[in-house]
Image 1 (cartoon, rainbow, N blue to C red):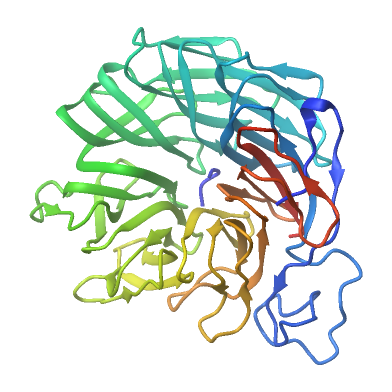
Image 2 (image 1 turned 180 degrees about the horizontal axis):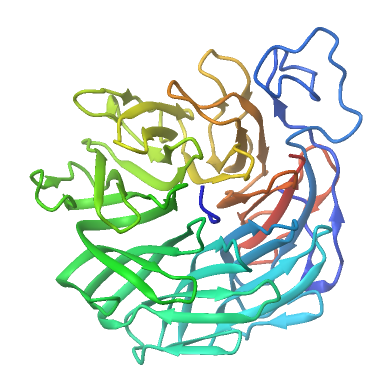
Length: 504
């Protein structure tokens, strides 16, 4: 609900321009999943006999694509779509990269690059986020007033388009959050200063423009009244005003082992999901602390807009449960995605038991009531190989966008209907659902798989009402965009980043 949070390619660094790749129809849900493609049950119902094949690009078909690369490594990447259909992309890059007429980066140095594309995917501006010793992109979200909010981590100092913040520490990471307007000008930047280490993971923006940042810290965090963790790694949640002022900060007795995702609901409710290894105790001692049964186990919890605890659910199992991202739907349902392994893995509680059994490493979607945390449903997607859900987003019109990566053939429905077939390597996937219900995911509008030999993953997905759907991710091997003759190149010895748009 918040404003957050393959390919044929174009080697922009060599000035080849924009590649238009039209075709490659995806699976569109309907009665006959063989040859039909257009108009097949966008509401999930069976289409009438004789539904025509599509002469125009089908829903879910890749339509245009860009590639960003050089001989070094580009990997972490985020995308979001502005109110006029403009596209913001942030990626981690090593060495120099060209974005239209702007060249960013330094040889053998790592930077975060932030740039904007218009609705034709032409470059509008680009800024570098660098300096200091090292930098890492964490997350990006659209701000409802102007531009975007960026979260990341740095050592020593970081220059965000001319606005410099410093930690003075070249050993430990320090997180930051910054606002950049729609023209690429930094508005403000705030470091997560203190004694010790802080790492930002995810950021979300509420409908009123306030900002919620989550991550972990060790030592002391000088945010608001200040937070202490002694020598343990602890979860933090910090809420900022539109101008970067700290509204409040909270520390929770969670030992984050990997990811932390956050989203904000329609009334400012804050949903957080992630992994823990060790202790989990966030409810002010109302319930005894829990210990993980494996590394990691998962959790999801909700705070009210002032940071007060509302409810929590844990996915504790002897097998790995790995939540990565969370989305609050407009009808007040919390969706969680990630991956899990094992048999009879619990996603519910004693009063509402929900279990899933993985065929291998399976992606999952699970749903909880926003108000009281009642477990509603859980679904597994995958096969005997490794499958993972990375990101959940809303398109602003109530549809749920889901992306990730799969090595297995993935059944798209529980009744053995259509499926995304196993590819040559690890392939990216993008799904578009209608809004979910208390009983399960909403009807699937379409699903698309992108990739070829090597590894491809869709790390983020975004779209607005009526705009194309955009997905981004890394690849380490050339491949051809399905349904087209467009080929994706990859420079030697590294990973490069792609962006592809889909017919909505």
